[in-house]
Image (cartoon, rainbow, N blue to C red; front, side, top):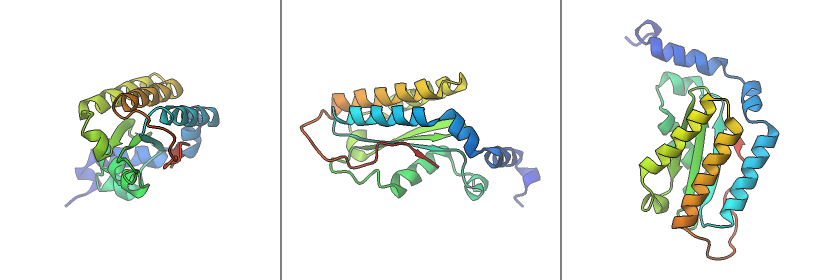
Length: 173
């Protein structure tokens, strides 16, 4: 039998997600921060062929928490749901922030994964979460976007003007 008494970690995680609010998410990622991130993504995409998308989620749906959906699983689902995989050069990348779990994941499309190791993405995620732990959401996120842009510029340099395939504005869920 799978009850709350048998799963105190699941219950604690459920409460954390239930208590997360849009107000808190907006305090951590205010409009000025979202605008700065969008500008950094736009500027970076002028220098490489990648398509960067940032999704910040205040909390998971309770059913996902209770089903023990991991941060990585959620990031992969959002990568698919928002068509980040569907770019011309297979160069879509998702930076996913789960505020309730205090976790970050980066999901890169197959074109990018052929050239950039998962450990590189994990190092960027670790840098972000360390910055978040210090309350530096604005700076840590911008630093991560700059690091991603630098890697994409190195491995997938721009080859001229091209359409913007994904929105540059961060998505708050």
